[in-house]
Amino acid sequence: MTVNRPRLRRRRTLAALGLGALLAGALYGLGPGTATASSHREAPLIAADPAVDNTDVYAFVSPDRPGYVTFVANWQPFSEPNGGPNFYPFATDATYHIKVDNDGDARPDAEFRWKFKNIDKRGNDTFLYNNGPVTSIDDENLLFRQTYTLESSFNGGDFKTRVADAPVAPSRVGPASMPNYQTLRDQATTSLPGGWKIFAGQADDPFFLDLRVFDLLYGGDLSETGQDTVAGYNVNTIALQVPFKDVALNADAGRNPVIGVWSSTERNRVRITGGGQSGGKVQVSRLGQPLVNEVVAPAGLKDAFNASDPSQDAKTPALVKRVLEPEVPKLIEQIYNIPAPKTPRNDLSEIFLTGITTKAGGPIKADLNSQLNNKDVQPSKFVPAEELRLNLSVPVASQPNRLGVLGGDLQGFPNGRRLTDDVVDIELQALEGAAQTGKLVDALAAGDKVNANDQRFSGQFPYLALPNGVAVNTTGQRAGQPQGKQSASPAAGQPDPSGGTGGTGGGAQQLSGVAAPDTAPATVPVAYATGASGLGLLIVLGGLFVLLRWRRGRVTRADGDPTLRF
Image (cartoon, helix red, strand yellow):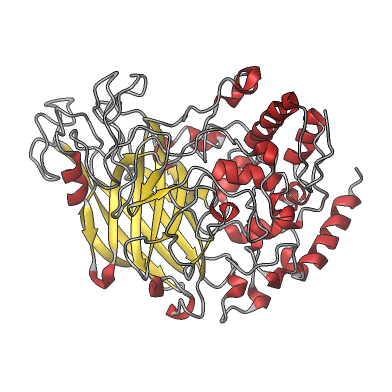
C-alpha cells in the first residue's frame, strides 16, 4: 500500500460523509493490543496505577425518574474482595471527571470533578481497616474512611463547589465486618439542591464478557465460552444523576436532546515516592465508548490516547486509517474466508465518531444520537470525536434488549450505554457489517455466551449491584452466599439476606424492575450497528463462531447471500 492511498480513501470518505474538512483524520481505529476487559488495565502506564484507571462509562435516561439522566463511571479494575488490609481507596492526589459535550465541538460544556480525602485513625496502633462491626457510614469501628468534594463547571465557567466532605461507601470487607452493606450504600448516596443525586464508593463490576479467548481461541473448539471473566470482582464507582436541563445545550433538551459523554482522571505531573507532588495536573486516563483503547489502540499509542482529549481525535492522522479500513474484518476473512465488508467503512465512521445522523451523509439512514441533530448546534463548529453519545428524548424501553439498537431497542448502546447492554456482542456484529444490511450476522449470533451480569442490578440510583464480599476463587460464593448453595434471585433492587443484591448470573437482568431479554430479533428496524474500528478481541470472537458454523456446513454472509459454503 502506498503512502498516498490512505489519503485518497480518506478524501473519498469525507465527501461521502458530507462534513468536508471536519472529518479529516476523524476516526481512530487501531490494531489489537494486550487487554483484559472494557478498559481494564488497557495501557502500559495506567496498568501500574489502578486507582485512577477508568474501566467503563455508562450514560442513560434514568428509568425511574423522568427528566433525569444518570452517569456512571468506574475505576480500580479487578478489585478482589479480600484485598485487605488496605483495600481500594480512591486516590487523594488525583481528580476524577465526568464531562459532557452538548454542542459537538468535542470539548466539555458541563464538567463534574471529584476530589477525595482520607480520614485515617489507625496511626501506629493497628493495621485493621475496621476494629469491629460497621453498621453506619460514620461508625467509630470504621478506622479508615474517605470523603469527597464535588465541583462543577458549565460552559467554560469557573468550578463551583456543590458539596464538600460527602461520605464515600467503604470497601466491602466481609459479612462479619459489614453485616448490612446496603445500609452503608444508602448512607453514602447524597441528594443535592437542584435534584442532583451523587454516589461514590465500591460496587460490583457491571461489565460482563468471556475473556478465555486468549487460551488458544477459546480452547480451540469453542468449549471455553460462557464464563464471565470479571464476575466476582469490584470497582470504585462514581455515579451522578442530574436533570436534562443541566447538561443539554441551552438548557433545552427538547430542542437539543443529544449529549456526548466521557470520563477522565488527572494526576500531578510529578509524584514523589513517600509523599509529595508538584508540577500541576495532567490527564492519565480517558474513557468514552467501551472497548476502544484496550483492544483498538496498539501498545505504542495507548498511553497517548489516555493523555489526549476528544478534540484531538480528528487531528491524529495515524489513528484514522484503520477505522475506514478496519483490521478485524480483514483478519476474519484471512482466517475463515468470510468476505469482509467493503471499505471505506463509512458506517463505522458515522457510528463511532460523528454519531448516527442523516446530516453526515453516511450509509445509516437515521437520526439518532449525533449533536448535529440538535437544533442549536452550528454545523461549522462540529468536530468528530470519540464520545459516548446519548439522545435524551428516546423513551425508556419497557422491555430492554441486551443488544440495544441492534435488537430494536433504540435506547440501548450505542445510544448511550445501560448497565445491561451487551457491548461485546453488539460491537462484534457491527464490525462484520450488520449496519450495512440491517440484519444480525447469523454466524456470530451466539456471541461470547455471556449475556448478563452475574449480579442483578438495583432498581434505584445508583443502580449497580452491591460489591462482592467473598473471594473470586471461591466457587459458588457471591455476596456471602454459602459455597455450593444457590438461592433464588430476589427482584431487582431487593437485598438478599447477606445484604447484597441477588442473582447468580445467566438469564435476564433487571433494571428499574424490567427484565432484559437474552435474545434479540433477527432483523433490525433501523439499519444500524455500533462499532469500534479494530477490536482485536472481537476478531477472534467472530472467527470462532464462524468456525462453529463451518462445521454445520454453511455460513450466511453479511450481505445476505446464503450461497457461501465450506
